[in-house]
Amino acid sequence: MIANVEGLKAGDHAYHVHEKGDCSAPDGTSAGGHFNPSSHKHGRPDGDEHHEGDFGNLTAGKDGKATKTFVMKGITIADGPTSIVGKGFIVHGRRTTSRRSRPGTRAAASRAA
Image (cartoon, rainbow, N blue to C red; front, side, top):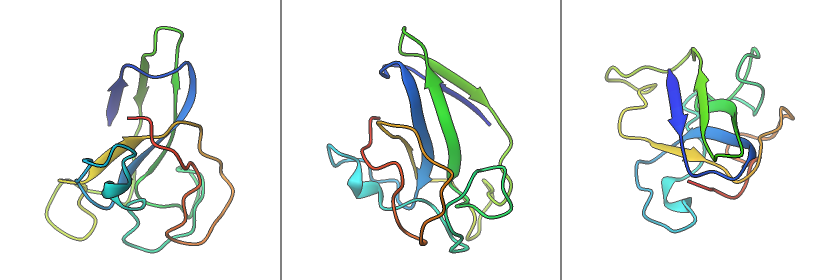
């Protein structure tokens, strides 16, 4: 996957796929929680256990642009329960942490884009 994002504040921003494709709410809450069809605990994207929709952090430069190339396991663009097609891609206002939390909790809180 390649993410190219513009219009961010400089610094780190959590980047997740959320449960729903509805991003109509000004704060992004209409997109639901993190995409997590296997009900995993929160963890680092390269760890043994993590939300399937947790892509870690993007780092925006002073120009507000961030680019990241990565491979994610456990998701697909084919039909099925692990498909991310039609889901909301959310850039949060701050970085994500690798601390573990209960399934469905939000570690990065506010949504920036």
